Length: 399
Image (cartoon, rainbow, N blue to C red; front, top):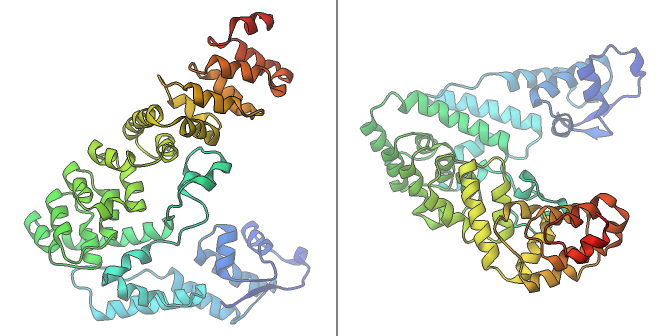
């Protein structure tokens, strides 16, 4: 499908299902299938099928005609050839033709079949990931939108493409290597390359993982798969032996979400990070609670060892949200002076400071003088009830 244009017809005379009407409402000017998939959230095959029916009804004009659309739908919905030990040239050719037709339907400039042919090369690991998006990983955690600009950019993964590729590797592993003995899998892990090596990264035995890392065809995609699916300390520690692997942002993200992550590897990843990055890890709900608890301890140590400017900057960037994690921490005189130098705060920031048990008396007195606190009786009461509020201010508050 090259382009889709809406015809000037009376839509009230058309018998459309709610789903067809929804897709038709998203056709604006000249659109493509890829545009409609992004706008509707439906599967590509489903969108093509609906566009074909809309073309039959005369609601849209499609280059190539409805017959080409229905042919494309049959190709898009056809099952892929099964993988196994005896994958032949004929099966590979059928899959290549199938992928080329899908690429024509999406309007991709390059056939995916050519990308699959390069899957056996070491550089193919980058093809399994999307380009870094404008959003950072801070979108996965509860961080103020204004603070995302200061976060370090990390490459975002195409979740759908990654899941599809990993299903193919899982199918290959279950078909070829699962029936083998451990010794046979270890031997194969040291010799194979490409998709078969990536499939062996899903093996639960740490000896197989050791053989994978000893393979000369090892690519960055291997530690990424192992970080996601492996569940033994010994196997995961092989990743930490390579500093270039451990420094990869996607490897770190997947390791942090692994429930069996050893504390030594967690410390090596978290300790060098800035306080803001450590805070994001500490509140990320996709990370297991055990790892988050250890990260909170690292955050407290970093906070107490950091400079006054860094402490105040963390509070400003998080609107005081970090204070709930800073148990048994405090602010020095210079950090308090920095906070008192600002004449206006958001209500959220003031509430978080009022709830923190270690808020300095000087900062509480400064907050009570702000116009927003004087106008808000609830905020004023919260600050006056704080145990560190100066007694003269508490008495003048008539509580």
